[in-house]
Length: 146
Length: 426
Image (cartoon, rainbow over the protein chains, first blue to last red):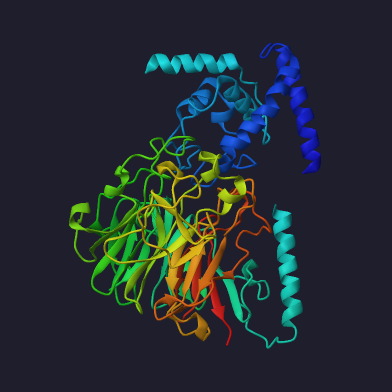
C-alpha cells in the first residue's frame, strides 16, 4: 500500500509528461501537479462521503469512480454530470439509488477542473487533465440548452 | 484484502480453539462450515454460527417456514428470479426453483401465505401444507402503486394480529432539501414528500389491489424504515428509522466531520396511529438525548424545535443502517433473549473520513414490551475487516433476520448472498 502510494504519483507524473508530448495539456506537468492537490481538497470536501476515500463508491447507492467510462471517457460528459447531477442511471448493469447532486452552482470552473483531474488520475485511474476552459465550455453549452 | 480476511479468520479460529479447550464437550460439526470458526462471526459464549447458503445474490429479507425451509427475497432478480427457496434437508439447504421476476426487500410468512414486496407493490403466494408455493406465477397483488423514485425505495412490511399489514414508504430524499443532497440548499416549506412517502401505511392483509387511498396513513415523519416488526407483548408496531445523512457535507458551518459521523441517531420508535417522528424538521441527538431542529429548517446544530415530535425508545449511533428488526419469541436462546429485539445493522457509508460502523447484529433486552436494558453487539465480524473504511470493502453486510421453528436465528447478507444460522448450545 505504502509502496503504491509512492509509486502512483511518479506514474502519474510520467503518464502526464507523455500526454504533454501529445499536446493534450500545454505548459507542462507543473500545471497538472497544481491541479492534483486542490483537486484532492475538493474531493475530500464534496465527494468523499458518497464516492469514498478509495473511489469505490457505496454498493447500490453511489457508483465507483474506478475504471469506468463515465470517469475515463469524454471529459464533457463527466463535467456535465458534476454541473447538472445524475439520477436513476444504471452503470455497468448496477443500480445506484442515491442521486448525484448538481454542483454547478456550488463549485467554480477551476474547482471542477481540479477535482475531475484528481479523480481521473487517482484510485488507479489515468486520463488527461480537465482544464478550466473545458469546464467553461461545458457550462456555456448547458446554459444555451436551458 | 483477502489476505487480511483469512488472517483474521485464522486469529478468530486460534482464539476459539484456545478458549474452548477447557469446556470442549465435543459438539457435532455443522455442515457447510468449520466447527471452530463460527462462520467468521464473534458471538456471546454458548452460541454457534454456520453458513447455510452462499452466493445467492443480494439477499434482503428472509422468512423461515415451520419445516425450517428458507424463502429469500433478492434486491435484484437473478436470472429472472427474485425469490429463492431453500429446502432444509437435515441441515443441508438445497436451492429449489426460484420465482417472482422482480427485485425488492420484504419477505414474510403470514396466515398460510408467503408475502413479498417489490419496490412498488406487495404480493402474496398461497402456501400448501408443507409451506411450498404451488402457483409461483400467480401471486395475488395486495398493495400496488407505491412510490419508487430510487432513493429509499424498499417496501418493507410486517403484520399485526388483527388482519393488517404495515408497509414502509421511504422518503425519496435525504432531508427534503429543494435540491436533494446539495450543499446550501434549504428545506422545502411544508415538505410535500410527506403526503405520499416518509411514513408507514396500514392496509388489509387479505384485500386485493389496494392503493394509497385504500390504506391508512398510519405514522409519518419517518425518513426510511427498512426494519420493522410487531411486538405481541405490547401489541404495537416497532420500527427502525434510517436517520438523515451528510450533516457535515451539507452544513459544514455547524458540524465537523466527527460530529457528522455519529449524528443523528438511528432510532427505534414504538408507533401508534397518528404518530409523527418529525422528519425532516427534527432529528434526535443520542448524546444530548434531545430533538434538534434540522439545519435545512433553521437549525444550527443546537437549537431544538418548537414543536415536540415522537421520542425514540432506543437511540443508536448514526448511519449504521438498521435493515431488519426481529422480536425473538423462540425457546432455544437463554431467558434474557426472550421477547427482546435483534437488529441487523447493514453498516454505515457516510462517516468518512472517520471509520465506518455497524456491520453487526445487535440485541436489545425487552420486558413487557419496553426496552429493559442497554443494547449490545450480538454477532460481529460480518465485514471480515477489523476496521471498515469504505463499505465496498466489507465482505458481508447483515440485512435480514428470521427465526427458525427451533428458535435458531437466521441472518442474511445482501453483499455476497450468504445466509447464517445462529444457534445456542445447551
